[in-house]
Length: 341
Image 1 (cartoon, rainbow, N blue to C red):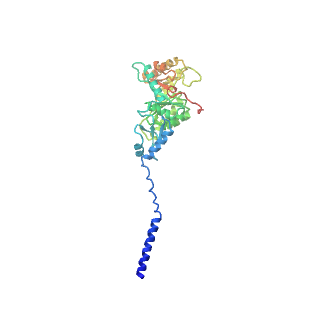
Image 2: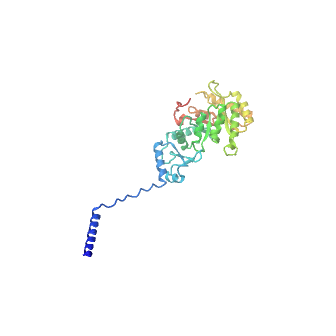
Image 3: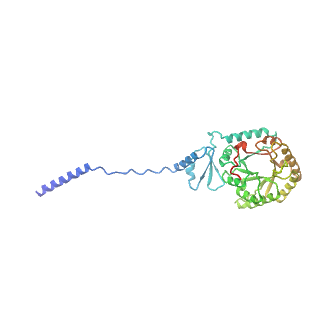
């Protein structure tokens, strides 16, 4: 009896367990957590985000210390080249260099100006240097012109030139053509470094001496012991207007000789003038001044450049001997001076 009762109880227990198992819901199984996106996808998402917030002609600055270069290289489209900047660990990615992208308004204007320069050039004359004057313009505009092949840019304000010099590719060259107080000369040279190729507005031996000293301090201090000579133009007041800066034409030969003799870190590259609007005789005055200066220095006239001509008259300046023209608004459009004092 005991055996039968035990078997019966075991049978009932088994049946009860089977019923409980059948009636109870199955245990909940959580799905596995989603796997993180592949590493190359992260910088691609960042690239797309930046591209969406930037204009089609902007330059994108990415800090390499936070994003692996290999990941960026694998994720970025192949038609967007990168350029080294003057900041370590940073490269500039231009969004305007795609062969499939339409030319920007700045690139088109630049091409038109180059064609006009070529047409105005004298037969057999050396190529005329085009300085794209980018004062008051943003880095994105400079990068548009850079995408069109422009490498020489001009600025008029010391702090603006210094600020831009560190945010563009290393092969950009700067011409400074605005007034420079002698106490700002060192800051200009130190801030732009060897990318500063020419100061076009030297009119006194005091300023020339300050620039010479600044260049001497730069060499070696920038980690580069190779020789460097900063080019300078003597600015000449060819119109005689009191509102215009520059040395009087009669004083230029003597000033040029002093710069050559006492400023070993400078290279006297030529003469510059702004001239009076619409008065082409100012170009002739500068050309005559070059003849006298070359005679004083004992060098050929061609050894001294003539920087003259701007947006409204650069073609006429070329026809009268200009070797360096400064064109701004015709390339970049009208300027906004509201943030300038």
